[in-house]
Length: 139
Image 1 (spheres, rainbow, N blue to C red):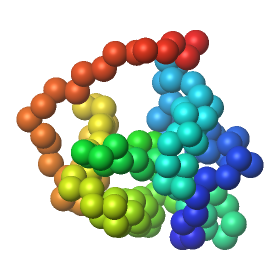
Image 2 (cartoon, rainbow, N blue to C red):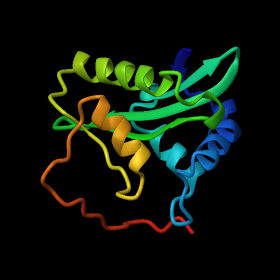
Image 3 (cartoon, rainbow, N blue to C red):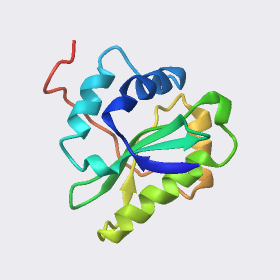
């Protein structure tokens, strides 16, 4: 898999990927999420390609205290080949290069496949609750 930074012409393919992986939700406009990411560390919005086909994505970020990953996705046709593991390793390396001490992520508690994947990579459940407050409504 070739890993590269997202480019504007990837928009429709990335949104289709996220839809195919059931990552989108009605209250999150994927195009707005992409636009927002492009204002902060856009080079850490990664896509993966196999045979010139965009088939994976991940958004990494670091705010000085913790690193984060969002929208890790691999198209269903390319799952179980180690591509998600490659993207995570690439993102972890980016974060280590800037001195990031810890990477956090959120997984819906019903997504047992993703939870098992992250556990295999060495991620564990933190004894915290994730809280959120919407500041801008996307609809």
